[in-house]
Length: 197
Image 1 (cartoon, helix red, strand yellow):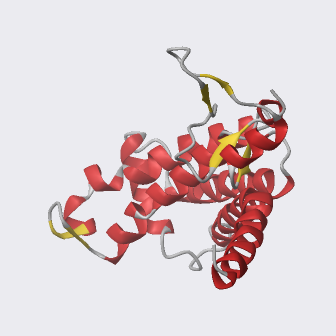
Image 2 (cartoon, one colour):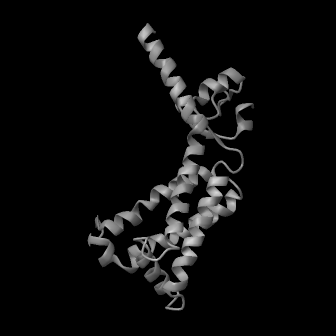
Image 3 (cartoon, helix red, strand yellow):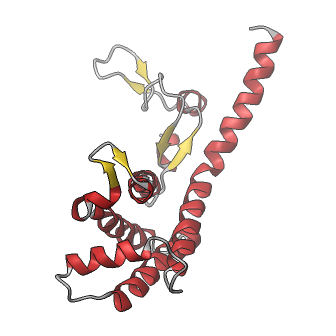
């Protein structure tokens, strides 16, 4: 390996190591900020551009029983609680359950009001439609965060860590050692106890 390659490898190792150590925390905090921020906006009439569509969705979902005067503040509190749960890391399982339920509701306008969320159904969303569809990123982020509730974490180089810890396990056919996560991966979400086995 040339000196330039060695320098690149050292820098790359430091960067990916930093990402592995702090990435999940950054993800949890950033999603928490979004939920808290957008939730609080719904508590002040006229500040949230999503409030009207959310109110009409809940009204249709409840067959007109729950009106905007109740649904929008309730949704705002719901989102703020999710945000606080993510920011503090307290009761993450309950927080993520609230998040997934809320996300399911945010997708309903695609079914209830297609004329408002698509200029051409189903591939050309309006600005509101884009606002809704981007929630798949939040759902995916929540899935990753959810993988940590039992102690999971990111490992920048699982194969290298396994070698250092003597953690290689036999291949399924008994032919030789095989990394638990597969040597072809450069990153994985693992529980701390797995790294020591």
